[in-house]
Amino acid sequence: MRIAVFSTKAYDRRFMDGANTDHRHELVYFEPRLTAATVPLAAGFEAVCAFVNDTLDAAVLQKLARGGTTLVALRCAGFNNVDLAAARDATMRVVRVPAYSPYAVAEHTVGLMLALNRKLTRAAARVRDGNFALDGLLGFDFHGRTVGIVGTGAIGSVTARILAGFGCEMLAYDPFPNETCRALGAAYVPLAELFARSDVITLHCPLSPETHHLVNDSALNQMKLGVMLINTSRGAILDTLAVIDALKSGKVGYLGLDVYEEESELFFEDLSDRVLQDDVFARLLTFPNVLITGHQAFFTRDALTGIAATTLDNVSTVERGERCTNEISTVQNTPAR
Ligand code: NAD
Image (cartoon, rainbow, N blue to C red; front, side, top):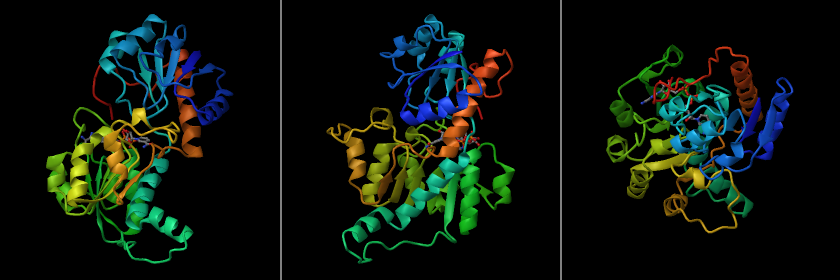
């Protein structure tokens, strides 16, 4: 198939070209994000390959359909950026990469936890500056601490496995509990109980209408004083303004983010020469107990290899007219499990 691949960086090309030797699709790479402004670039392409911050709302999907596109191949797991009802109306099929390397994201999640706890970025900067004082670097043992995992699918389960190795007590919340996590020692409890009992809370549910601002003022009020919050899932699961208030009051003692509500205007680009226009993000950067990475949790060789292989397999499966197990049903408008 001719595929217009949006939001591409050199690393995307490298891994997609590598995987394509097994498929021989015609891949045409576009650096910009897919938006209402860039959608004309896709005219005449049967398939469009999109990433996390590409816009696939009704207007874009209708324009894609008018240009002859019949397939959207997401090279990511989350599909909160796709208007599924509009895709159905435009008879557009949508495939995704439900699982690639849950290890990549889970390991990054735990990396954020450890770096926040032991203040690794501050410690490294001090040592580089010849300052070997330890004041301000005091941490705690993860062993014996209670970690609440919200969403125990692929990534949540691997996170649970790593934390079990640390000797953490684990609480979990998921509408569909999983036996692997139970076997690792996680106790499924109501969300309010998880909020109230956890020293560390990590979010691994998809962004959906139900999980939008799941962590809001009311949720934060239920949490322990000084709780560590980690979000490597999707930015809008956290109400950022509410979390900023909770950081100011000390309710949230540590915040680790790999995702941000308004990240599409910032992440994946080098903006180091520009004045930051997002005042909320700027405020987050002022807290000494906040650690932010720019949506890089997935970014390992293993994950990129898996993403490229599954994306192109999905396209080939659809092209052959076979049933693709990674197709998202466009009949529903909330994320599938
Ligand atoms: P998954 O589908 O395997 O697991 C998601 C789990 O969340 C499921 O068990 C589901 O039942 C549960 N869930 C659904 N609604 C929930 C709710 N209201 N409360 C609690 N749990 C709920 O998905 P996954 O592969 O584990 O990925 C999880 C999320 O991680 C993705 O949706 C994506 O947004 C994010 N992600 C981020 C990165 C990154 O680089 N930062 C990379 C991949 C995925």
